[in-house]
Every structure is written in structure tokens, then in C-alpha cells.
Image (cartoon, rainbow, N blue to C red):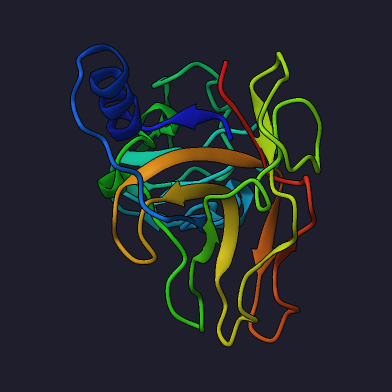
Length: 209
């Protein structure tokens, strides 16, 4: 995962340094974040609305959000790779969106088509220690990384889910507070009747550094 949300950062700060209560839930819940308009090259000369999101035809690990509605140009623009950078595309403006993926209001999650978050109990069995993938004892490593010890498998889609840009970790099975998010190494379009999306053991790495 690429980043902690403001919610988690604030709660950890208050818990660790300011003696404030913070009680995590029994389980964490993994969900899928989508680019609502898919790949940028697929919406040329197309009307877009504020809040629409895309990724470039050549993914760069960043998500872009429409901040000025308009009609896209005939050719894909050169997207900025700086946090919060902007680019004009025809009469529309895209803003690099990843710094804003720290609050539920700024995240578009898959919905419908049998989609549900995958819940994982917080345990030594489900998440590896920092010393090695697959370990089930207390952490003793130096890199701050943990990963899933078993496959994380979502329901089989019964409708098109769209282009999955990344993952989020929430503190509830629905709604709740976003804790962590990260971009997929390779974005994936998930359509109706595709096999159930699944991440193999050790495929989801969370690093605290």
C-alpha cells in the first residue's frame, strides 16, 4: 500500500504520542478503487464531469480527476507526475488525484454486481511478520513490511466493475473509515462473468516506514 489516510495518521499520532484511545476493529476490510472513466485514451473528444477519474493509457501509478468539466481533446494529454499537478485536456482540466485519496469522500469504490469488500481478521495467521512473507510469529524485521498470508478473493462479478486502479483498506465491511490505499502494479478491467478477482498470498504488501 502506498499511503496511510489522514484518519489513520491522526489516530495513530494521538494514540502513540498523546495518550488518546484508539481501538481498532477485529478485522480489516480490503476493497477495490476504480478509475470511473477508465483509460484516458478511451475518452477522446468526450464530455467529462467534475469528479470523473482516469488513468493514462500507459499507467504511471497515479489517478487523475476532472476539476473543470469540459470536452476532452482529440489526443491524450501529457499527465503530470507531481502530486496535485494539473493538465488541460481540450476544455477540461485534470488534476493529479492521489494525494486526495486519504478520505472516503475522495475514493470511488466498485459497487454493485455482487461486489463486496474482503474481510480479514487482524491476526498473526492472516498477516505476515515484518521479517518475511508467510511468517506467523511476532514481527522482528527491519523493513516495516507485512503482507497477506493467504489469498484475498473477491466475489465473482455479475456486472461490469470497471477499471480497478488500486486497493483500499477500511475499518468496516461497508462505509467505515479508509485506513490505507495503494495503486495496483498493473490496473485490471473487471467485467461481468470474469473469474473472481483474487490476490495471491504475499501479493498485498503494507509497509510502515
